[in-house]
Length: 54
Image 1: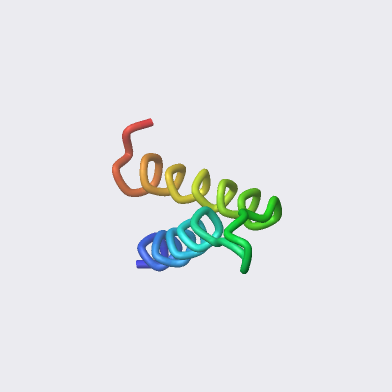
Image 2 (image 1 turned 60 degrees about the vertical axis):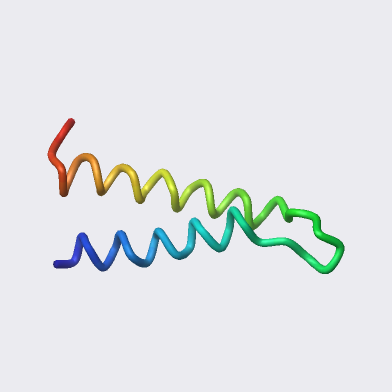
């Protein structure tokens, strides 16, 4: 159950971080960085803990 909650939270963080734009329509480095890190953790938990592929 905690793995699914973790996936939900990291998925939301990754989505927000990677799609965020400021008032001028530009991406911010901080949002992209933390979004990419959250995406890595998302796929790690999905593939290793839930699907047990690795």
